[in-house]
Image (cartoon, rainbow, N blue to C red):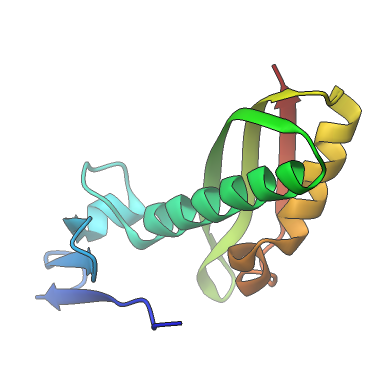
Length: 141
């Protein structure tokens, strides 16, 4: 498999500088600043992109798991809440909360939650982020 590529550039000081991040496929190219990362300014930030990657990986993996289980997946939507907090040793991602909602035929809410929990622990991005505490909230529509 090919390596996936992303890149970033930063110019200037931490507080007044600015940067850009882009992915190798060209699907995303956007700016970021200190304020977009550590405050509420518009633009993106690394944590938001990490959340998008995690939500995408988890959603695809859950769909695959349910499909292998014989369930008819109509739609799965997941939001990743990536929490960046300042601690004693500086800023860190303190936790990731995944919130997923599924429209799946042939499954009950309890089984859907069980599959979501197993996927939270087993998707590729979750494995890469295993040092970060994660929660899952799974709802069947």
